[in-house]
Length: 465
Image 1 (tube, rainbow, N blue to C red):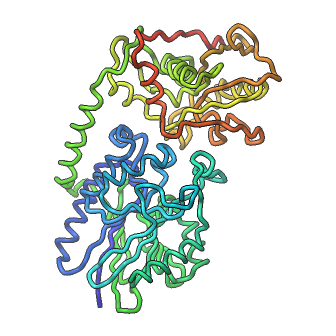
Image 2 (cartoon, one colour):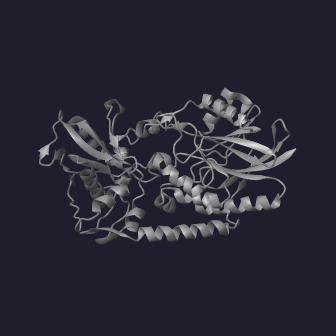
Image 3 (cartoon, helix red, strand yellow):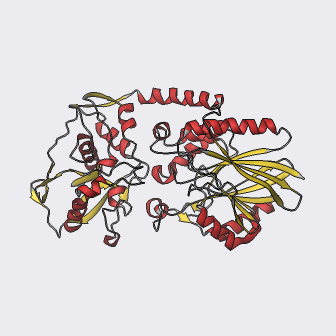
């Protein structure tokens, strides 16, 4: 019998304190079982746009901390990839230095995305363990990966069978799945492929499964969310199959001391970030305020920046995409902008009719919709829609000094939140075809706009409601 232990986390979402305590539990488990291999795996979404350090590094800091916590492999979730584009993956790989797994999203030519691998083969004592990594390819009915990035989404069941066969050809005794598909999809995987993959460590749906979820002889394990629990599987390999001896979850409580190694790495990252953020990026002629229920300076600044960047006739953007705190007059340091502008939205430009434009602006100025707090905005209100190159006077929308012409086409700049279907402003039936800068997010747009200019003036009075 080859006994071994798998510890697993998922959906940490930037909870660094919890991860530091998980690292302590990993160290303690290894110390308590010096003769048994202990493997720590993560199911994805360690990063989080609304967590300060994760946001400031576009998620890379969390992979550095996972590495120091002793992680042996992780799958890529949807915490950073759809927000910062596939171009972020090499930075994640450099920070992690352990295998990052992503098999089911591919380049148009079928090749793997840079920085990730489809599978890994780990030596666990005398056992060779093959691991396949998959991520959730869609959000509801939408595939942002196909629409935004032109990626291929490979069929799940056929892919698992092919990769499992290849891993066994490479010498894997057992093949498992590190899945960010979600519990419901994991159950469907079990129904479709049977027990050829006897173990699935899951994520994405934030389920806490203290005893696991069983599909016949297949175990699906998931450890909740936000580093509040660490999953543990006590396993044995008898030369033919893996036997599950015990399934448990360990509460990550405040009486568990944070790992000094994680704390030291955290301090090193903070120093690096501070040096990068202390640069002056531009100057503001007057202080700018932020508000979700009225016109505000920070959202007008973003709208101006979007219009200039794209050469559009007008720009529109909701307050939730803008810096969510005041910006002082005078020289502006990068830290002041980046710490207030956490939006991972991408700039885009599209042609739309005057009728469509009027409909989007009407929705954007609806006070009930503006007050709505969405999960996509992490519980923050949407805020009112702000304009550049246009203004609202009473019930009329003007482009410059001319009222909008319903049948005319306008070149409009915005973010993917306003132009995509997820935000709820543009109708799917319109079949808009925006062009997006997928490597750029809102704080980059503002920073580029301020660079090299004299003190920037942001005019108010565009929403005369």
